[in-house]
Length: 346
Image 1 (tube, rainbow, N blue to C red):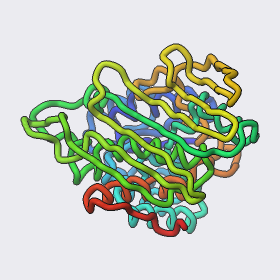
Image 2 (image 1 turned 180 degrees about the vertical axis):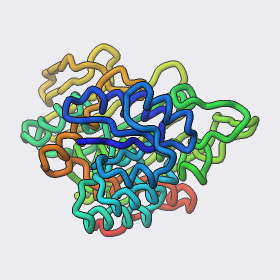
Image 3 (image 1 turned 180 degrees about the horizontal axis):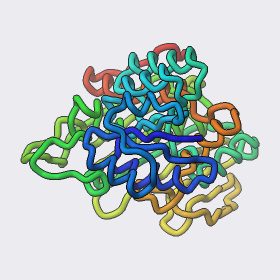
Image 4 (image 1 turned 30 degrees about the horizontal axis):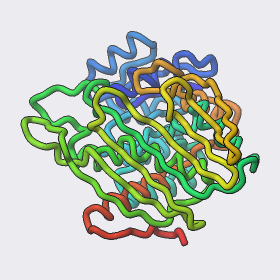
């Protein structure tokens, strides 16, 4: 396949371009960014054309697939344009700024007959994949509760923040959310995938506790605490933070009838399975992937494979939409100070 990458910021530079370039079944056809210097730099490094416009990239018949790595507010319009041009699409998370945008994107993907995948990459972490296998085997019985957390010092260090202007991650018009959209959408998708259940209701608190830009508190949340009730009645929690300084956290605990799975709760091992009788199995799996490209995320290879081999999309537009619905409900819950039920989930 031949890929065009739209948006040449940190996620394209550190993650997507290197992984597409390394995949033997893929050729990079070019880059587009509103800043021509950024697209030219990546084209010089990885090959392909530095396109002057998105339209020019989409008009290139040789490019059959497009990866949307731009700011959140562009995801919907650029995805719709790519699908209309007959391209397969990989869209970065969060898939959309709102539930309505996500619904348009999912409908367009279905109508187009092209493949659309959402980059919910935590599914491809080796420990998470092993946990999914164990849960599906039934060895620990049914899931009865869960808790998950994701915390780091914010997107500034890796995404090229410069003091003096409002970083798009901190701009409600550019991102739609703060920590909810950046890291919460990862965990919203992960708990859906691991438990096999939809989120039915959320109760959330969000706050801006420390993060500043241009000398003022940022206008999006830097922390969130969420309670989730799943469609089958089990409950869990999700803790998110952009103010976790010193050491990141990216852990999940799944409690089952016959034991528990602990993911990234220890600094020395990625995964433990603790049985109800006290037996503990430790799985020495590599550390979780990160945004700096130290490990292969798996999401790029999965997208290439489903296009090249014409297999089902592993993380569908409907999956991306479901995760957006969760964080949208969290945002509303905090704003309205009440529990919010998700549309279409009983």
